[in-house]
Amino acid sequence: MRREASEEKLAGLQKIFQDLGSVLVAFSGGIDSTLVLKVAHETLGEKALAVTAVSPTFPEIELDWTKRLIAEIGARHQIVRTDQLQVPDFVQNDASRCFHCKTDLYQLLTPIQRELHLGAIVDGTNLDDLGDDRPGFAAAKQWHVRSPLLEAGLSKQDTRELARTLGLSNWDKPAAACLSSRIQRGTAITIDKLSRVERAEAFLMQQGFRQVRVRDTDGAARVEVETDELSRLFEPAMQQAVRDRLRDFGFAAVTLDPAGYRKGGGNGDVKSKE
Picture 1 (cartoon, rainbow, N blue to C red):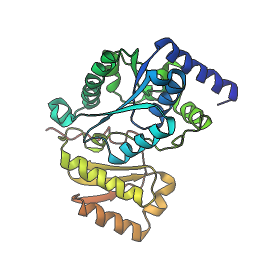
Picture 2: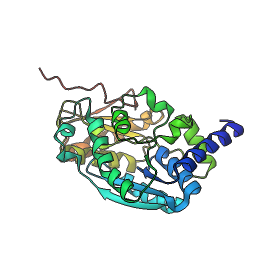
Picture 3: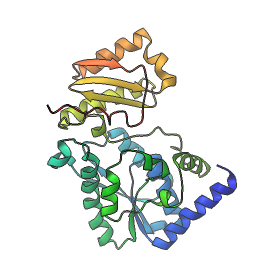
């Protein structure tokens, strides 16, 4: 992004926050919501509040990221607890799962917004997200959530470049997603499944892999890493270590995907109901 374009998009974001006057930022610690919080905080100061919803679908490593970034930015922050596993429509894990997840989130955030008289709830949706399978968009619209990056015309690449310009430490952080996205659609989401996926991905990241997905299909794991890290994953010693450790976590079988990580790679894994 050219410097002039970057400055223009930043000014666009600042204008959105100025017009809103105060905001509640749905803050996950990912690069998108981090940029939203950074600019909101610099524009509005104490009138910008970050809220992170913690649940069984939110990896502990991501919570660590949120705390680190809050300290870096200096914004106000609140952690709230929720549990989508108490929502039957979410647990059944069909194509509308994200709608029910986001509905649960916004039901939690809206009373905070109203109690504190904040101008709007804002999220980190950007232009590139429009091409994804995102039922959560419908929930955001229903709850009148604003998307400043989208409104200011920022793509994912624009977001990363602007975040780097503003000195955010996670500007190149790999994309994350809630743990439920790893569970095969049509298969009920349980705490045991979420836990073994979280432990498996944490183990792989401890081995130095940056972008990791462990997808759970009928109790079997499919491991995805970035294509430039595949050669290391397929080294004999690493293969064996990964297979052994993931079986220890409770997976019945372990497959290393030679195609590598694919965004939304679990969306097509639908369990037959015949």
